[in-house]
Length: 362
Image 1: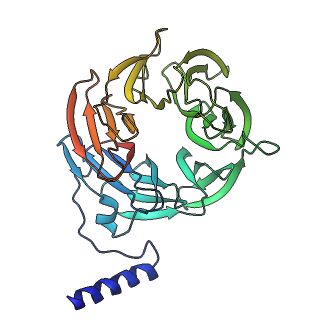
Image 2: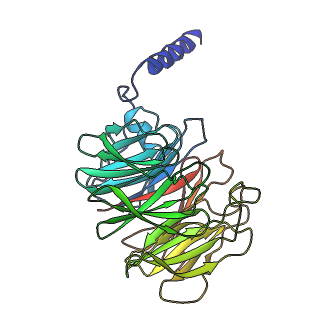
Image 3: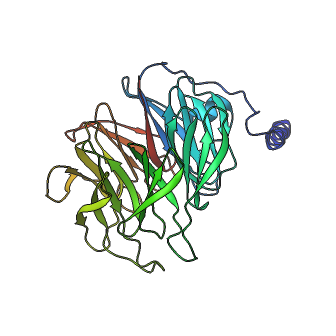
């Protein structure tokens, strides 16, 4: 027994002394190469460094757990927040670790990383040699070169003076040469960036705390706001769903929620004509109608200790809906897969606090 303890201590010391991308050697999970599927980004617990990445083969209905660690013998880090795919590479944004890990999406093998980030949230590719990384605290958007994996510049987004509206940036969508990003924490702006000059050229004032945005088939921008929270120093108001014509940058339509509701995770289907979002349950709305969003998939009783589903996304090819239940944020979370008509297809366990999805094309 004592020799086993000594061996474990030695292994722990070895691990702590080595660089995070130099420690290899576990059994590598198999993958079907070009078969489509979905990566499930599991945040883990803040400051625990127990984030993980699961992979679901949507054709076979099979799930592989903790694929990053099992492939590379490397912990994913502290709070895995989002993921994006460019060609055959997957970019996993690790928020509290301030880095982005890059993997081969077919083999799950580590191929590189981007470091030097403050509190990264999302990565968006402008072209093969330029990508933007939004940030919660940096008050700037990092410009990175995906080829060299280096930060090549930044876009200053800080407003003048102190206080609120310092523009912490989140999600990104493109229309023409302009990128739109929402400023969520204690803010009410959508920033417009010219991707040719890497400069903020305009901003759109919306409601308090825009947390997500999508572009529909008609090039209208839809923005979901949560309104803040009771007792917030920034104030609180009713949440809203806003429609903005991307070319005009003017708010055209506003749907308000009841006091106390905090909707989030706005998504759109593969044909760009139906919106989905979480408000404890899953709601949907046609982009062409004037009716309020409808309850689409009710969350089961006891879903997450905070009430309701924790994550949502829609397959851009099949328009199938994936929802995540964090349950108690301690045990492994649950993902449920639904057809576009709302009928269930499958459910499976993943890691702790599944918060985001990334669909791998065939």
